Image 1 (cartoon, one colour):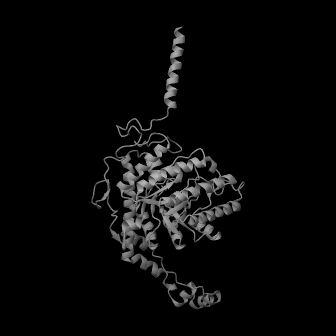
Image 2: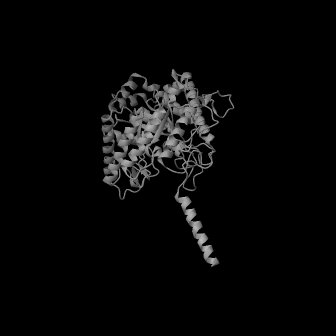
Image 3: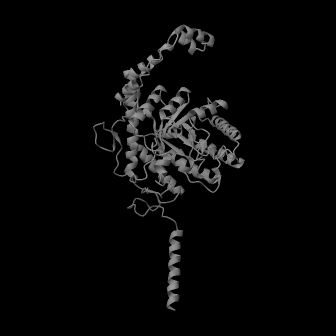
Length: 477
């Protein structure tokens, strides 16, 4: 009898426990201290105690202040804010958890309730706009599935997205807008073989429908660009892949995107973001040169530009400066995802750029390009796994913005000084002759050049002055 009572007690306890878990997490977390109303809406600030970030100059010891980024200051005839056109990445800033393949999430922001509900999506959006206001940035970037939950059907997903976008449109007003939007075509299992390059027609159609909707909401929000990142558009093995057919399909997908952009009156720039691999073994838009060749082959060179991500550049074996210059000289530099990787780590770590030397080289390309508008610098960068306080979100972005601002100042100093440009000019001065001009104009035939070689004899090859170039560069930092 006693054993029966104990068994009954255990059963009842189990039922109560299951009832608690079945109810799901509360709309607002338990440790909010009265920050939620009865309706479940967040009340008050998301970032209490953190003021609007201001410029205080290099001598300031205040971590919550800009030391180098002074938005209204003019550099080379343009305001700093117009050179930069900074943007906040919604996915890293408000969906990043600190989780990695070896460990569970480490970040539990106080406004999160543990769900991916529509109500939670709206709360994150409100947090996003408070952050934009306090950090002093008027652009943001998003994937469709970052800002609104996936539904059971495409229709339900679209409805969820429309509801969140309506709130975003209300919150952003007339001063804030997306730098770019995009569709997330890599996380859902349906995209295991890619979207535009999937071997399944149904997946190709679903990807097209998702991009169509994402382009529409980007346009509705006043977005200035639309990005294609093909994380799954590639292959794991050529043994089971028809690469030519997949590349043709990718081109047809891009053509359809161009046609729809024009149909809805979206005047933003379409951007392709190169990356060599990860998560696929080989991604078709490996680097800037590969992507430029793809665009030329399929007659898309005038319809797309490139979104260069610095960490992707190093994954492809290049420096960020190399990728920017490759895009620039091909007339394709449209936007920069401002981040960096770790030279000791072989994957896409998406760290905030803090290297002044790297930032200076980046800004040299931007200045030579005449700026990035309608593109800009998007902080496709995330907090380290070990950074778990809300304040860290601000500190990371302040550091990234100050680094690029200091890079702009250093690049401007190099240009105004003129020594580096003069060194480069002198290196190629033999081509600044009548014969050199003929060669550069395509009039240097082999017979003529052979006669000149015989006349001139063994050429004298001058020093490249590599060390002097590096000394001049370092003096500007």
